[in-house]
Length: 287
Length: 287
Image (cartoon, rainbow over all chains, first blue to last red; front, side, top):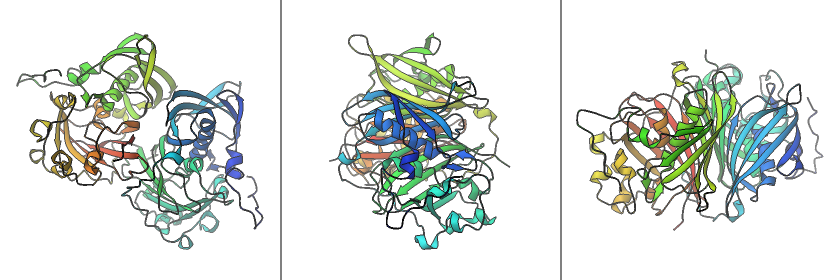
């Protein structure tokens, strides 16, 4: 497990120069093809976090497409990724005046060096800065206590088994109302809420929102289910560039049935804007 | 506009022999490639309905993949489709024991006969019949009045401008609380609710659910916006084979901002199961 990055008190990481930026940097090999070594710093219980992987794909697509910001990204998770060498292969699907659509695959290598696909995404990109400032959002920010009354991994009463490197990359403060699972008393409600930031102080941006929507503990824990809850599919809508400062993330599950559940996530910024929404379909182990 | 299909009183269309099945039938040209002439019977205000197109793609993928039922389908809409010749090109992405993932493109032809892509989808298929019968859904069916107290296009006080052939294919009964737009008095709330069936009596199945999630009037009408609300992206989760009988569809928009909105749809069957959920990102014309 890498040592926690120590940042001098007078200097906070910034967008472009941070753990998140370093670990999602892709190197263009040729037009549309990018190499990366997936970091082992974003693993949770031995699995590379799906949101980190989505951000890697998002970074490559931002370079491959003529528009800078993800507007809607749809990802199907095929096989489990591992830290280490990977390649992202992108394709331009359609270029329009205000939106471009692309496709991207994240692949790794088997023992013979053959490419094995991990994730495939479709994504439509635009320029968030050009959107009109007309806001008629009727959704309300989540009811979450002030950050000082919420709890993080550093003051959690229960150690998380297996590799939990990602907890060192994040500033996560969970709503005590969604922390029962950590104390052996899950609420039974499919909810998870937290204040969210990056541990090195980097502010959020449209790409880091792709990480954010998949960075909280699974709602399944509060429902009382144990074990891995692998993502089958995840769609994210990025609706606005987030303001500086911590984010509030609220996740809800309302349809646990047949061995699958959905997780609906909302991400709110410090200006009370609903900056991202996502839904994922995940598999649960019943019983 | 095609004549409304007249069905003898003693015979209702069935799954496999109905307007929906005929108009979504694809013909395999070669492995993975399917031809179809897109019907003009599923247009709304001169546009071919996006849910009908999704069902066409879903039909092709059901043939191309080893598993029969769509579990999660993510579609990016690229250019507007027209009635007439089209081809669906599919690709197997990954085959697993319980899930298979595929990709499909719907393309039509320009004046020179070149293929122009209309929609690209990623989809993961499984077998709904093999899912355990463990239901812990906490969501509740929509509060919608009994069907007799709801209204359809055949008794609507306001004609819909342009081609509205799709209204003849559907049995749609809208909640009067979400019909203000048709009377020049939109509620201002981003909601739309209706009882839904197919006009020829065919019961719902997993493929017709792909149509259902995009078959109601746009919530934008109730918000007071006029004009076309084109879908940019649509993701559907099919969670259970629907029981026979009418469906209840409830759609909500909570984040109209920056010229875009999301529509969250839930589809409930006659056994009170939440059989499908979807979210689309759509563009609005601001007034």
